[in-house]
Length: 138
Figure 1 (cartoon, rainbow, N blue to C red):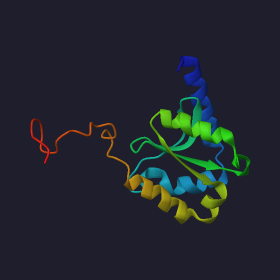
Figure 2: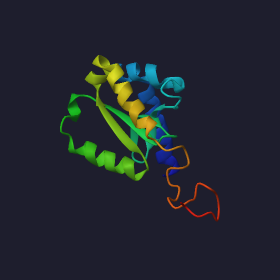
Figure 3: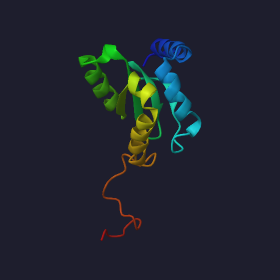
């Protein structure tokens, strides 16, 4: 990404962080400061051509909150594919669900995090021996 695009993305993310929706505020209250299973989340992170609502870099997870304008939006599928190309899994929730069923949303995120590989091991070769170098797999 060029320096100008990076600067623009950073400025746009800063503006978005200052103007969170009610649903974003409510979710942020529960996931900030490693409150959810010890995972660190950030708000309004530039990823590729997008600025995502919340991201957990160590679990390579993005959480997007959608309002009614996203109902059956084909652009969301393309956005999810692009974010996946950057190595992230994407969970989407309706704003209404965050506001009315916060615990359910947090449970869904926590379940995904519990299945996340340890940081740095996501792309580890599958043929590595747990016993160490040169040892045969049993």
